[in-house]
Length: 161
Image: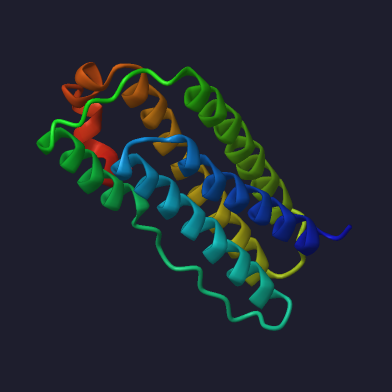
């Protein structure tokens, strides 16, 4: 399997994971976060697909962390009751592992592709995957102890990552 096909499969796997997780979560706001992650992975897929046909590729910036901060603020404002959900946290840890592996894959492949445009795209994808890891880490902390997490200063810097 070539690099492009492998990258496409990575994105499909992650998108499917994020589209499946919300079925197990009660909180509408947390489900929205998974929808945003799935949309980011779908955007990655479309961008990689374009790479096949052109070298003029622009992935654009992801604003997922800014959007998620707004969602967490709504959770706090609505005083949603969230309990530690062990099964969801385990799935999140699995997703975080996938994101980390994909970040490493894109970083490695950026050094192997012959064209500068491809290198830039792979590095951008690696950076997006890193942001997803950061987001998932914060979701795990949030679901483990929402009250403590909401009072944490780190929360106030989600969009600055």
